[in-house]
Image (cartoon, rainbow, N blue to C red):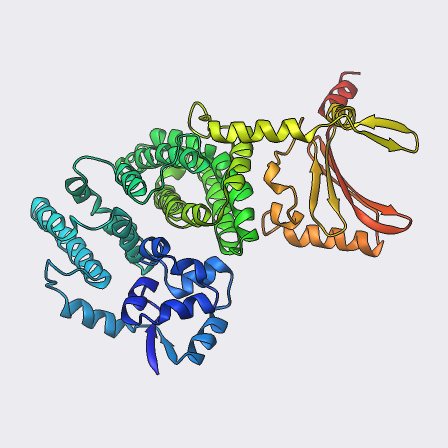
Length: 479
């Protein structure tokens, strides 16, 4: 049998076994076989990572590959060490992904051993002048995933500028996007999220610098500001991840959402602790750790999440993401940019959605517009979930908990973090079995009430009502 090294990237394996490209499509990885995907993501993605993104069982994929005559192995540490020794002096005209990775490994070691920066920089430019910045950053991430410390890989940042002629990596990536025909207007959701990432990156770098210098006050200020990352994470979690699940990519939602939560929790914990000077020294390594996790998350967003969305979302999908993104506001930037193409589409859609038709009910009749106005005037947030657990409707005003319009038509479970899903499933299951017909949850002054809805004793859905009672409690206290 032919041997597939699961530690190698998909691009490297396809270069070794060209017939693997069609097989990957057959076993469920059709998207990565597209030329752009293979060139961009294939140089970063391994088969195990791909299973994680797609939500596939790795053992099932290995069994399928076995049926095509491939034996799946993991390159041993001895093999890796042997290859590293064998390729210690890689020819500078080498153009294989493996050769480039070994070159970068060697350059990192040279910098780590104190070799002159300019000497390494000169070799870097010669070897990588015709290589995509995405491949370079992809190889760097691969080295980190293999266990190389972020600090060691970051030593390469000092030699990047020579290759990019003073431009940032993001500027070079934008140029490469343009060359591939991906020209995004400033108002496009991906442009907006990338812009937020640039500001987040700057804040992370400032925090890392302050932490290295032992400047507790500056670190505390930076961590406090970075706690504002919540809306940025919420946008990708609520607008992009659920839609990717609909297109068959549950992995990002299952993995990234949990990591986002861990980052937010760690930022909150650290900000509380280092507020007191006596605890700062023992937290310095934790500060560095969470900041580096945030940097890695930016990489995963821009090299995995956003490209997946760009390849799978329709124009109309992006219009609705834009609509919700604007409603959720900007993170770390002063404003959101208008995307006129989306504005025109949404305006036309709104104009055609309201008619003068009347809805007749047992106790009267209302026009669609009157019914909508009446519902919007009620002092509760209202959401309706049908008998098949899909979100059909929610009020568009007075959001106590923000809801993106993209959740319409989705399973309600997909609109919640993975840790909450079992509770929601259990509640709706109880409603269907008629074991209970409502449930109240209190969060400070806010009540969330879930009510089962039955039509002639048949379960037809659930209404969620959220109401803020803070004013009522204040009045009681004042009496």
